[in-house]
Length: 241
Image: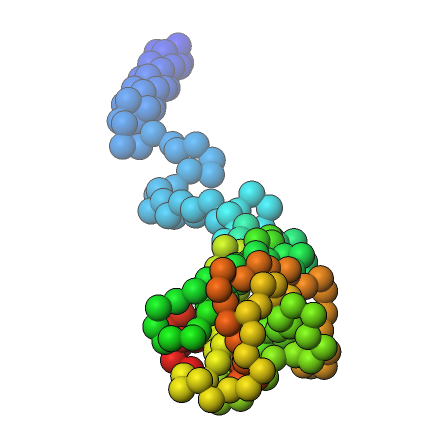
């Protein structure tokens, strides 16, 4: 009986050792090592989502605007202030919006000179120069009075220019005076010493402003045929009559 028990014990022990050996072999096989819970075959990495780009015109973005108008439109629809100025008012030629219309030429704003000319004969030349700081208009014809005559000298209507003569500061206009008939047929001839030059207003009625008082060249002889032209911008045009 003891022998049978001994053998049974040996067989059981051998079987136990064999089982332990098999278990050890299985644990040593890397291919059979149990994987951690939740692990599996790795999937392909998803592409990284780029950082979102700020919408144009949003905070932190750069909005472009028109630089030519008073207000521009940004690329994101945001209204932005333009950097360029609008067109300004040019009335008055940049002079602060003052009145730029010419004044009427008078003895206060001009210098008038009378001189004798060799051609045509029996003629004098009047030269009026703007000495003021603004343009002035020499309207119509000069109104002349020799010495103490009561009536003004006749005006040559055919000499009327196409436009009013306007003088910038420093510019001059001209008028010629016919003293007498070339053939000596005029009446009431005499020697004159003084000449008063009055200036006509725009509407041509009467005179305006202070006149110019001139001394005539020595030996100035006139008769009833004396006449004067309209103011001209060119000396040659004045001496045509």
